[in-house]
Amino acid sequence: MTMQAVFFPGDKKVEVREMEIPKPGQGEVLVQLKASAICRSDMSLYYGTSVFEGTKTGCTVPGHEPAGVIKEVGAGVANFKSGDRVAVYLALGCGECAHCKSGYKMFCKEFKCIGFDSHGGDADYMVVPEENCMRLPDEMSYITAAVSTDAVGTLYHAQKRMAISGRDTLVIFGMGPMGGAGVMVAKGFGATVIAVDMLDERLEIAKELGADYTLNGKNVNILAEISKITNDRGADAAIDCSGSPFAENDALNSVRAHGRVAFIGENKELKIHPSEQLIRKQITVMGSWYFPIQEFDEIAEFIVRKQLPVEKLVTHTFTLEEAEKAFKLFDERKTEKAVFVWE
Image 1: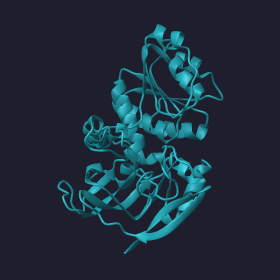
Image 2: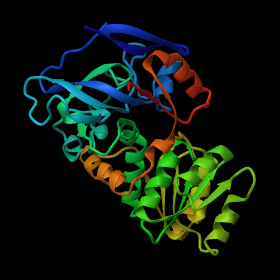
Image 3: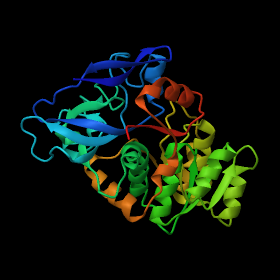
Image 4: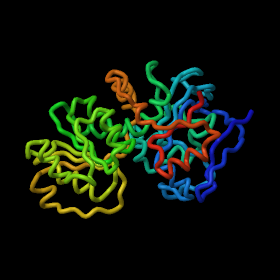
C-alpha cells in the first residue's frame, strides 16, 4: 500500500512522491492525516536549509502541525486505539531527562523535531510515538487542532506564564498567525487588546478576532497611541510575534512600571537600553517558544469553552496534490495560515 508525501529537494522545489505507508513499531501509532498546517519555519526546508542545526534537508516529509485519526497501533500501545482523534506534539526527546518528564520535550539534549528530523504531517499517513499524541475534544475540528499545536498553544502558554487577565491591557506586535492567535487567547482571558502591524489587511483580521484597538505602524506613532489609549499609564503587558528589532523595542517601551513583556518572534540580535527599558521600570521579560505536552488538554478545553474562532486564522486550504502551489503562495506571503486538508 502506498501513499502520497511532500518532499523538498531544495531551491524552492516541491515534489509529491509515492511511498510505502509506514508501519507503527513498538509504542507507535499510525495516524491518517486530516489537517496539516504550514508554518513559516517550514520554509527553511523549502529553501534547502533548516532552522535546526544538523537537520538534513530533502529527505524527510515536512509538517510539524498535524492532526488526524489513528488507523493502527503498534505493540505496547496502551492509551490510544484505532479511531481516536489526535493532534501530534512536534518534539521528540529521550523520555528520561527532567525536561521530558516535565513535558518540555523541546529542551531535551536529544531533541528532534517532527517534520524536520523525522517524517511529518504533509503526507497521507505518519507514524509517531504514542506519547506524542494529544487527544481531541469531540467539538474540535481537525483544522483547529492542527493550528492549535503551534500558534494557539504557544500563545496560550505565553499568556498563562504572563498571568494575562481582564485587568490587563495587552499590546501584541505582529498580526501574522501567531499574533492573531494571541488576540484570540487574550480575549479569552478577558484582556483589552491593542493589535499592531504594518498591513491594514492583517489589522482587519485582528479586529475580526476581537482586537479592541488596531494600530498601523506606518501611519501612527505607536508609543504615543498606546500612551493615549492607556491614559498615559502604559500597557500592562506586551508580546512581540514579529521578530522585528523595532517592534521588540516598542514592546519594551510600551509597558508601564512592573509591566510584562514576552518575545515570541525569532530574532538573532537586538540592541536594547537596560537602564531605561528594564531596570528603572522593573519589568519582567521572558522568551516563549512552545508549550509542555500535558498542557494541550487545558488548551483544547479553553478553545472549546471560550469558542475561540481559530479557523479564522486560516486564509487558504489545499490538497496535498497542490503542495507546490501552496508553498509558493505561502512563500510569497499571499496567504496567512494555510492548511493541507484531506476532506
